[in-house]
Amino acid sequence: MQISFHGAAGDVTGSCHLLEVGKQRILIDCGLFQGSKRLREENSEPFGFDPASVDVMLLTHAHLDHCGRIPLLVKQGFQGRILTTAATVDLAKLVLLDAARLQEEEAERYGVAALFGTQDVEQALPRLQGVMAYGTPREVAPGVRATFGDAGHILGSAWILLEVEEGGKTRNIVFSGDLGNPGNPILRDPQRLAAVDTLVMESTYGDRNHRSRAETLAEFRQAITQTLSGGGNVVIPTFALERAQDLLFYLRQFMQDGSVPNSTPVFLDSPMAISATEIFRRHPECFDPEVRQRELAGEDPFALPRLQFTQTSEASRAIAAAHGAIIMAGSGMATGGRVLHHLKNNLDGAANRVILVGYAAAGTPARALADGVKELNVYGSTVAVKAQVSTIGGFSAHAGHDDLIAWAQSGKPRQVLLVHGEEDAATVLAGDLEKQGLAAHVPHLGETWDLTAARNTSAGK
Ligand code: ZN
Image (cartoon, rainbow, N blue to C red):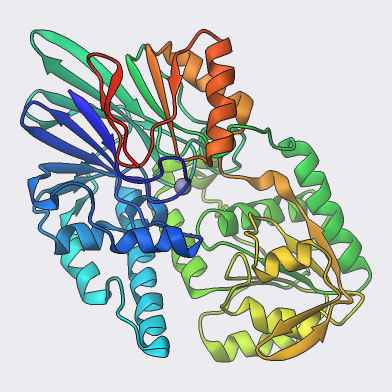
């Protein structure tokens, strides 16, 4: 029994791990490499295994860095089923079609070939099957049983336990996928582990903890109330999936407790975030017990008195006339999308405020704003930055350092293989796991690990 790492090894994107048990080949995630040019170029490289030889794929969640190479996998010969939760199927469909559209647009603009297009996604989608319910084991290959546990990261997200019969013995291995930050307002906290032999765990925040949820919310509330009481607009560049719904939920809380006036116009100006919110509404089985109970009592967790979902570009343009409004729009790092118009309209007003609620990669407009630039280039014109800019860092969808260690300890694993983290973060976490008496290793891209002997058999790149 062995596992090889074909993405998110020493990096945070491109998750793709191949488990081989006898003649069975099981792929866990098949994500897109994102970020720097060097990483993006990995997407065009061979997988490191023959897609046609894979029997079945299991998908932890619908983020592009976990599902984005599925169209390529199918195009290159994979003929098996992709098993996941029902909510993940709905979200993955949305995410993959959006990615294909963006790539087709980019290909046309720059005269290059798209990595994959809408047709490739449509070919791949029928393979996705939302048959996995949390906590219900299912045989996914001869002698291999899979159970999905709630990872509390985004709607439908799971960690995956595989129990393998080999030589009269049962061995088990858990893939964490992305592990959630406990205290998410809508989702359940990550479910703890039972005893596990091998744990393949993410390490995105392996070297740091997040600011507490209570402090984060207090900051967010204050940034909003200050701006609204001064008559300004609040512009929030936001990711369409999970963050936008979390924010709607918090705004509803603020209006219920009276800290934000009910009369405040709120715009969700992102067709993708609107679709994602509809998918949330269709999957209340993923909500935490309190939200679920209120949902059953007829309450809509995402409803606000003056909330507008602006689907068309006409409706989006009309937002320019709004005052004292909260405007949420994509993209999350302001690298494109409708948020650029709102930045253009609002940055030069001292009464307005931009609230950055997500990760801002180096080189993006969101990072420039966070770093305090005095002017920003938007659509070829220079806009003075007179608006306040607040960076609120505690909304992460990932477990922090201490949460990762506590979660790993709950399974008392014989070995921990750390993936999905920058080399530095993964190394710090490996050291701290060792201090807790857990053997930890950070595999390289292409590395193969013998699970029975607990050592690597090829070192990879
Ligand atoms: Zn994720």
